[in-house]
Image 1: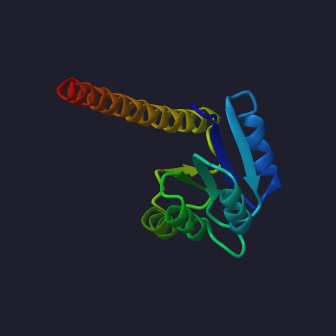
Image 2: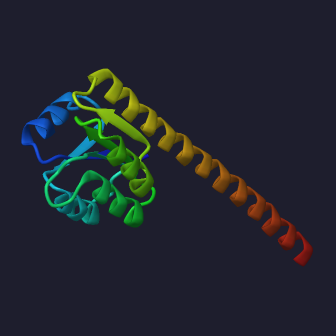
Amino acid sequence: MDNTTILFVDDELSILSTLKRLLRREPYDILTAESGQQGLDILAENSVNIVISDMRMPHMSGAEFLHQVKQHYPHTKRIIMSGYADIEAVVDAVNKGGICHFISKPWDNDELKTIICDLVADKQNQESQQIQTLQTIIREQQQEINSLKSALK
């Protein structure tokens, strides 16, 4: 299974630096973007499993950014972070961006790590189930091939 790639999008460099430092010992590939547009550019060139975006950014809000992520990369898990308790904006992000988690700033490091770990575990479980399904299909097709070979003899 491939490494998990996480993209953090925030217009504050200090926050991006803190998040990278927080996860530096974890088995993740970390990418960062300072704007929604830069995040979209990174997504166009990289396979990203989880996107964690700030809510309030200039030019493109987190909700708008995650809405585009949902449209173009529907299998990428989406999380929004915000230091503002604007319930309308959060509802907008949930509805438009299909986010799976909302994290308040300042965040709890352990909670953030747990959320990411749970998403990674879900991804690995889905991949494992897909592999099992494919193996079953292959076995069934091999049995059918063997039956056809026997019938031809």
